[in-house]
Length: 276
Image (cartoon, rainbow, N blue to C red; front, top):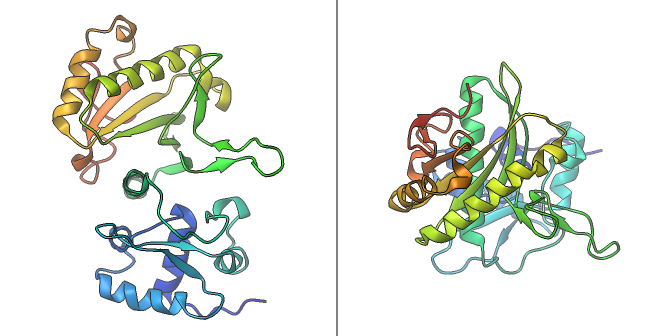
């Protein structure tokens, strides 16, 4: 039996890491766990101590913020003391000795998920599920079938994986969304990705995956607003999008924290809410 010796803020750290898998101090501050990195550092020190710590850090590289994750010991705490379901607790399969090449993209994706959570909390909306591209199902050791939870088919020969797929329960129905984060300055690459998502939407791949007969929306978040505007302008000239203007929504990354649920632009560059 595990005895609860955790402070409220220590508990909040464990719960947040269980949901998001990896977090920086700035992300913990955004979640309201504490206002100051120094305070979080002291809290984290207690969770990292001992031969079997509750939390570990990914070794820091120059210019990259330190990121933390749970250990199996912490997972037992969440399951036993806080009634987490086993599938709710996200943690790596083993110790991490170096950061991944996509660490910046992954960190920004988690920050977007945090903004989604905070926006829905403020409106009293329930998030049915959230899958990220680095969340996987299957097992490569035995069945050799490990794949991303966000993978779906464009056609019979090719799949894509969205950065995020999530569902929000509104007053009308459960609304589904895919989300892509575009960091670069290659507008044509982004246009090509939009076309692939449009092909998958028309094929009904995600509809089949989730067992729904109605449409979902494809969200696109751009680090550079000028690239976003170029992509919207180019998509207006693509015949495939003639009847898909309302299914694709665009927003600059800098505006996500201000208002996640509204202020998006459709393919016609008309402002839209995330749902109605």
